View 1 (spheres, rainbow, N blue to C red):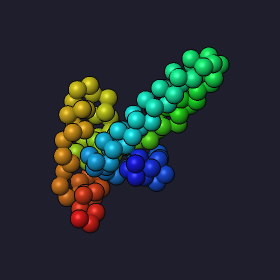
View 2: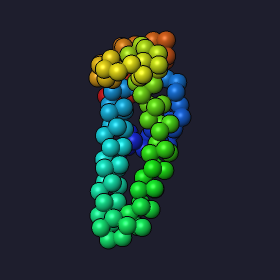
View 3: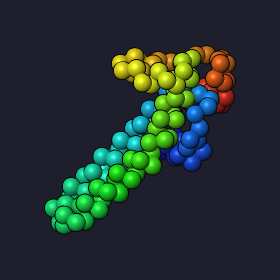
Length: 120
């Protein structure tokens, strides 16, 4: 959860720098957990009151829109970690391969190695 909050609070629209695999995948994991839980809540509320369910679905739409920028930003930073331009997130299949590939060791064109910056 700390990785999700770090992306939201500290690097909301930061397209510069690099993001480790852990930062990207933990963000995506908690993003999906939150969205799925909200949809389950909306479905349950839809059985109680269609108006209430519709309101929750509208709020989910706003949440997805609010999280669109940090989702793209963390994906761009992940591409930077493997030494590619952020535009590579638009290439189907290849972008998934890059997202699971280990980042370049040491500094690259986009910044310093995020793994080297953390103490073990």
